[in-house]
Length: 157
Figure 1 (cartoon, rainbow, N blue to C red):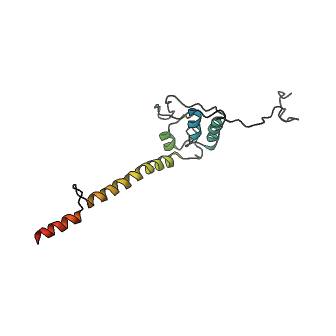
Figure 2: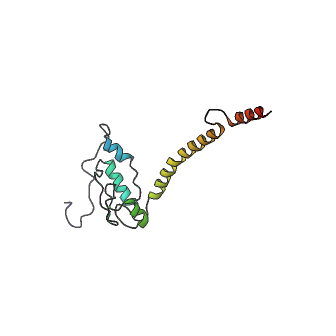
């Protein structure tokens, strides 16, 4: 029997083998499945990242409906499911946001947030700068500054 103490090896293989792999979006992906698949699990150690990816893959991932309390700052700031530490505390203390251990973080939190801030600010700066350049060439009536200078010179002669 497999329940005997010390019986670690089996003499036969697994009795029931799966023919096809499990697909969490077999009958069309719901909004919850799409959101879980697209989520990037940052600020976690390798083990916790693998656990959350497994939960997403086999449709066991359940997102939070309300924020949870962080165990470090004791504020309701934990927005990600299965996490115990909020992002600012995890970043500051360099801890895994899920298990709370000081392990190597696979995907750091700070790089993603900085990239998002840079991406959103860059296009606006370019548009504004371009618009200012156009405003310098034209006055309110639609005439260019060069035309106004030549008109004033013509009147003076």
